[in-house]
Structure formats: C-alpha cells, structure tokens
Image (cartoon, rainbow over all chains, first blue to last red; front, side, top):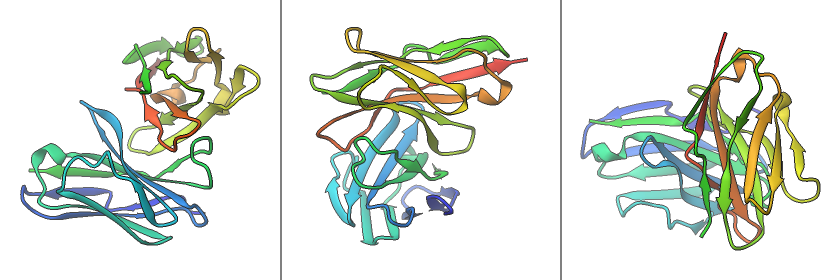
Length: 115
Length: 113
C-alpha cells in the first residue's frame, strides 16, 4: 500500500484565494483525520470522519474552513478565503476501526504558505 | 480535559549515549498513550503505544517507554542513540471513550557525532 497520499505537497497562494487540500486514505481504513501543525500551536486536530461522515469538527478554526469526504477514498480540506495566519503544515491521517487505540497513519503533509 | 506536557523542547545528545524524553499527561479517566516520531519533511509514524498490561512498552528502532500511573508520566528512552534518530518526537494521549489524539508540543532530539 502506498500509505496516505496528500496533494499538493506545497502550496503558495495569496491572501483571499481559495485553497483546496486533498487526501487519499489507506484503503480499508474507516477513520480519516485532518490536522494542522504550526510552531505556535503545535499539532491540532481539525476534524475527523468515520465512514465518510464528519463526526467532530470542533477543531475547525472558523467558517472559512470546510472539509468533505465524498467517498471512502478521498477527502478535501478547503479554505476560502485564505489568510496569512492559515500558513501551516496540514496533515491527513487514517485509521482502521477504533482509533482511540489503533495507530493513525499520517500522510507527508501539505505545506501551505499564504502571502 | 486531557493535556500532554513535553517539558523539553530540544534534547541534544551525543551518538551512542542514552536518552530520555519526558512526557506527562493529565486526564481524569483511563487513557491510552502513544509516542510518534516525525522525521524532517515527513508525516508522523508510531513508535510505540501503551494500552494496558505491562507498564514497560517496547517499540520500533530500539525505543521503549514506561507508563507510571502515579506520576502520570510516559517517558521515552533509548539506551544508545544513532545519528538517524534525529527527529521530532511527540507524546500523545487518547481517552478510552474518545477518538481524539491530543498531542504534546514535541521534543526535538538532536544526535551529534
């Protein structure tokens, strides 16, 4: 298996533009997580899905952020409009069955820079 | 609410020396504990986890950790480090009724020749 796949690996955009980050989880995994990593706040959980359904989005910072999972093999995280403070590394992770004790497999991340 | 504290932001150590990375957590309920490692420009990968049973947990790459319930700690150790162990190490906790992983701020291990 190729592991969790994220695209793009790097994104540079200007303030006000729409940004879409993409994730393909490991086949057969039924949980998908989106995290954000910054120097100031560390690693934060934004939202997670179970069987394509959003379960907890309490970590989504504001309405400019939205996430979807139209099928078991694809998820997107969208920021519209983007702001410089959104600059961070965004990770997608997936897990099989109960992720409270099962390993979460992380993708390589998308480094987002908003100018 | 759960929280994880990694007091050391950076730990420099010479190659082949032992190392301990400290982790303390707070939670009012039973928890699962994890250590993840992040190599430069990569995602996190699991080193080891404690679910129940023996308090000494062995993981990959020669790392081990000991769960101490009375001190609410889960320190990571390795008896002899290699240059290739240079990375960021994250301690994480999840409550047994929750699917959320709460991460510490990370400790950067810098192994010098």
